[in-house]
Image (cartoon, rainbow, N blue to C red):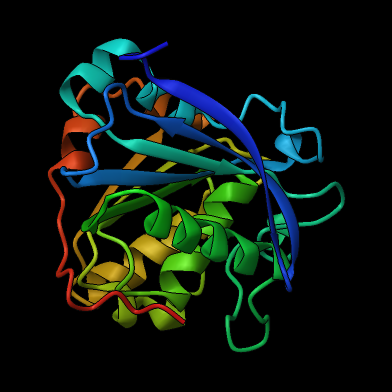
Length: 243
């Protein structure tokens, strides 16, 4: 209906492959205005090809009516195929090397989806955000490390990245979340990234939930300061860093 926000299931196709994704469109979209966009990367439980997964805690929280009334934004949640990963590294290993592990085909498709949405709608290039949980937490670290100027802020939840490359994202506002008792993705992965970013002079915030296991995303997106913090971040739109 006119004037209502819409979540649409789509299938992206390119020479690189095919990927289902869902896009949330703000109510009363005005092509004369510029809108922020949040890329939401799901965990292992969201994999498939039916485009009916519950997506991410971020997608649910950010699409809520009370949030959209204050922070109108596009939301994108791609769906990774079964048995594939956003980053091809074992989750229990924590930190990894981007030099030894190339960007996955799946994450390349995510970037192409983001590019296509930017072409179709009036997106503010200075307000492109990324978040993800678990496997998507890895994907969040990986995409900002490989595209360090593309995003205005990142929220990786229970993931890990490459601490040796922290300097490349030291300029980027990042809020990291993890549970101290996470046995699926050890908290050391987040701790290593946070420590490396602190040493690099990074704009880093870290929240570790004592005694919490793998589902730290449930608490993260209930933090009253997280959504306002996210949407106030901007970067320089003249440095899109697209590949």
